Image (cartoon, rainbow, N blue to C red; front, side, top):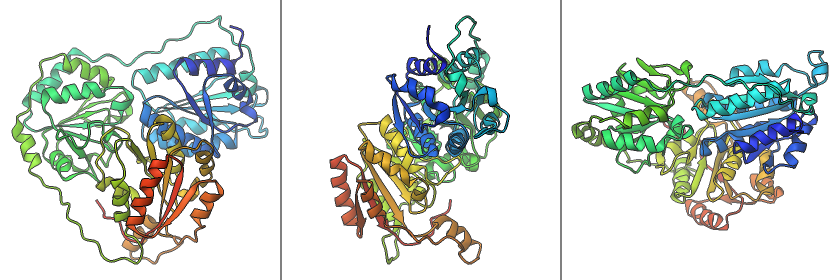
Amino acid sequence: MNINIAEYLVKKLEENGVKYVFGYPGEQVLPIYEALRKSKIKHVLMRHEQAAAHAADAYARITGNYGVCLATAGPGAMNLVMGVSAAYKDNVPLLVITGDVPKTVKGQDTFQDLDLNCVFKPITIKSFNSTTSEKIENNISEIFSRNSEGITGPYHLNIPKDVQKKQLNIDHKVITNQKIKAPLEYDIEHTIKLIEESKKPLIILGSGIIYSDAIDEVNEFVNKTKIPVTTTYPARGIIPEDNPKNLGLIGNRGTTKANYASENADLIIALATRLCDRTISHINTDNIIQVNTNKEQNNAKYFYNNNVNEFLHELNKQELPITDNTWKTRIDNQKENTKKTYAETEYLHPEKVVQSILKKADDNTTIILDAGTTPTYFTINSTLTKHSQMIFSGGLGPMGYSLPASIGASFARPDDIIFATTGDGSIQMTIQELAVISTYKLPIIIFVINNSLLGIIKQWQDMAGIPKYQVDLDNPDFVKLASAYNIEADDIKSYDELESKLEKAIKAKKPHLFNINVDDLHIPLP
């Protein structure tokens, strides 16, 4: 095999189904870029490395496959850190590739030399320093085999430039890593026994269901047992939320039914979720079964370190107990408080704006949320019919996520219209990515919900009884900015205008930006 290591890397990406790499070139990754130029993989040129990581993140959340991002040494790699840490907090399968200064000058305080593995180690499952052909082969093998087992999260490959140019040495053995163990017969039997003994069981689904390709197994298990289902935020829509089996989102922003069920359940079956503090906020029982490939996320009385697909497959082969319908009837009798009143406002009301946007969303719409006040309104007003239909980087919550993530989402779902919903503060963190949306003519509709404030921070100041400080924003003209990037844009003055112009933008299937001035209003707290 007469190829260099950069070419081998790209070849292995192709073999493992990678279709897109989101990146930004630099001196220390030029050999990899030359290999990409000759490959079938499409490189998406972002305008900032943070955006490359966010785009790869959203692509992975939708497809369940690795999102791949690429950057050069020093500042390029450091710019990836925000996006990689966001993916790490949400267990998103990301492959992060960085070039590095040549081995011959590594550690000599040369230009752009930093210990990148030390930087990425705390925010990845593993950070590899691939300094030989033997290492790169083993590292790539481990990365893709671990993902197939259901161990998801970011992996980091750091490859010095001189190593990228070396010829591949194939005269060595590729190390096979220990796999996640198959479910034990006793654990399956014990789970069935706990379900039999339970009067009020509840299933919580996490995003690992997507990454382990276990949606069919989940549906079979639920259909057989009739156990009510709730989901974490990134698992919303795995079972459509208009399906009576699904009680909706659990936790701090959960539905009335989901949280009633979690407060009163006598058994929790947590599948492929880390059971974060916001998810378990209403749970009162410690009788919890958790199936998760990440041992560090052991938050249950009965923890099974298994691939959830394999675990459910083994369960579904057994004769499973059926939950008495009395429990589901009790849950269904809990009514949502849907009646709302709105005070007169000088500008548009942010929640009514969100409702107008959601009216025009359908099964072929994917919505990307940003940090700030608007995610609350989108969460409490939406019903999702497919997984990853509403994406929110909730574990870390970085400002500026929505715009670049919408790019990754558009490549993952090319037939969907993508709604990038953001605030006037958040969009200015990554606004340069309008160039990418324009270049690729992506059907992304951007909503700048603009209150000329860092609204959520002002709300915290208000609640603390202190004067607002450093939260007022003197914003640019977002419509003119969009026009400068050759993106059509409108200032919106009314709900009717928003709905009519949005309908036209959806039909056009072209980039469009709406600047919507709203009042400064506190979001409802959980």
